[in-house]
Length: 590
Ligand code: ASP
Image (cartoon, rainbow, N blue to C red; front, side):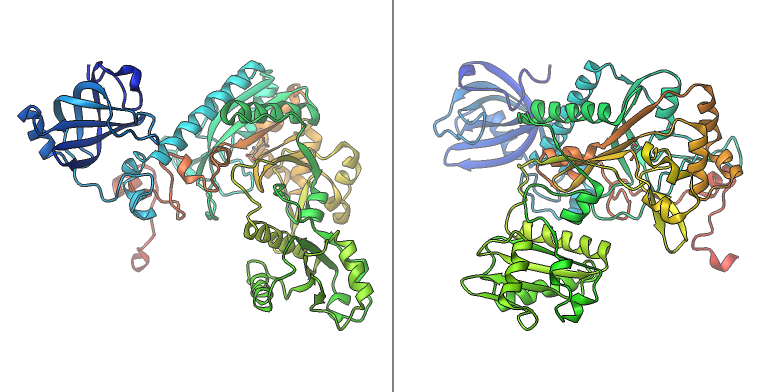
């Protein structure tokens, strides 16, 4: 037996026991005649001690130890002279009888401490060392607990976890597929699933009316901040349900997770808002409700007073920022530069300071009474700073929404341990793309239109099609979309029409989705579901904004595994076997 106990386990009540521990050397210290070693495993850290009168063999080994050596230590649990209340094992230490080096270690390239001195790239290259650090251990432990509790809840609700294949037929869901060449079928390719969407729908046709899976998904996207090419979903589907059933079921899952993992009880139903409301009040389809500062459409209040910038704008919106009326000229100039950055894209910023004196950047155009009317339209109070943007409606709403988030952050109103979940419903079914002059599915092509919009859905008028609402919903937490789903199309004609709207010819639809359309001939039940982004959910529960720490071996933002150095070039023999030829870097040979 290598150990009798872990390094996180022993307490004062264990004093007097002879124990054997095994782990990694965190720190070695000598203080006067005493030699200390902090021994670490994933359960914690325990202090080992030997004085200068200890067994010479013990002292000799102690003298040869280095950081991260793997050792086995035997001794007696003793009460410490100077206790460390910050450590769970801080009341005790192990007086060494014997110590044994199980393996030496090269000096680690960064300190294995909660606050490491290693930069991100270095830590990624030595991920297995980074994973020894407390914050990552805690992140992975949280992830494990989240997965266990998810399965417990779903099992209690009669969901069956069923695995679906990774080598599948390409089923576009909005992103690019990763493809895998088939050696046995020369010239043909599998795709890795962007999600198990079609399979879970086929499982509904097959009668498995409550399906779930904690499953890896793959999307070959340009990695915007904090995305991973492979990520994990809690993927679920249910038959014989309406939207309300799905929302209740998964609100239940989230409440269970909050309670069992964080000890937070949500007794009230989650808030719900429609997509249109979300855009109007928050300029985002994933509003952060941890703070107010809602947006106000003041178009009708400010137009027509001779200020040409406003008079020519489609939309004028404002937020009232509490307590910021005292902003200096320098601060408002800085904010103006901030909104003009290309990511935000505003042309300028108009402000009104509701201090003891009311000051604004548009005093010339509005009387004090009119300024007061604007303040009233913004629900603003004395002490507020009103910020106003104008321009094309959707774009300006989004810009103002981003400014709202920025001001929330600057005022410290977006706290990691404050949780505000909500449902966003009634998304548009389709999104028009000017560049390609066609509609795209806003969620995915299997999402059903709302029943009341079915006539518009079958019309050939693009303006009507753009108004069709989807029976789709997202669950949002603190400004992040943590899940989304829909009631699906289960009727072959509706599905065919959807493919037609998306620009597939009959043959293309048949080639790509024939298997699904065929299945719909054989009694497809009404069904719907959703998927949670599991990595993000874990990160948010951990109070973090980035998912990387919650994935044991993540990729960097170029999609590279810098530890194993993947992707990598494969040799010609392997290419030949797959009937592939890499032309990259071989231009001169063409
Ligand atoms: N497959 C969808 C997605 O990955 C989720 C769903 O509609 O259930 O976003």
